[in-house]
Length: 255
Image 1 (tube, rainbow, N blue to C red):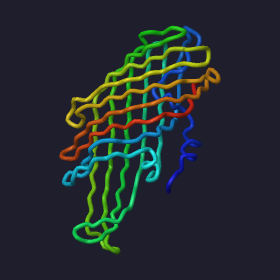
Image 2 (image 1 turned 180 degrees about the vertical axis):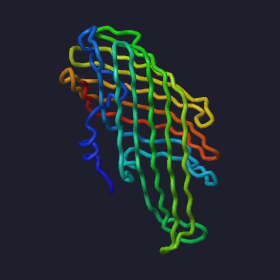
Image 3 (image 1 turned 60 degrees about the vertical axis):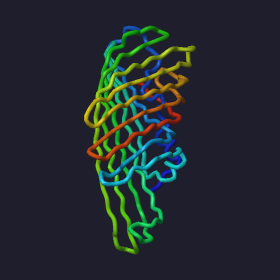
Image 4 (image 1 turned 90 degrees about the vertical axis):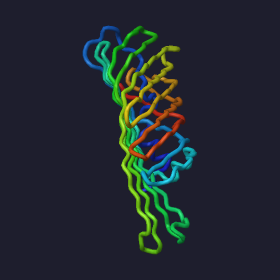
């Protein structure tokens, strides 16, 4: 079932500071502090994709509107836990897409249906190197891993004439920086960046994001910003080299 922009916003109107810390609480606070942040990432995708090991390569340029038209389901959530200067951080997103078009396949006019499920997670741990009332800086190291499950079916009437499936999995270590600067009592600027790769499945990956955060209270913030992610992955002869970027929107809950 397709979901609309309003439905996504209603479900995930929590957290586009994706990867960002909250305003600092009282200095010296003991125990754990947590954040849970579903968010909306209105992203488009550009790049080269060879989704099947024996298939052709495709130049892809999809706007957020293109993706939304074919969206079956989507979930975006980030979270973090902090105790004193020790920090754990995670980010997870899942996208399910499908589309059916009419094309000539093997000399026959066929109904061609493509389906894709994209799952990616980032997990990192680190140390708050700078912890001031108006600024903080976190040094992090972790891993980015994901799975792209892609399927293609071509049918003439009710007869399948072509079928292909591939499951691309990948993982790579990352190093990351996350910083925040308070611009006023209620407004802060958050930045995040990471860099990784060098494994058999990931040649390179990096990410940058920035958000402007308005703190309604100590536990609720509204955020808006921008995020760009580069991912160059290989699995056998299947390959994907993409740039994904777009605006972030949401709120964040701290407790």
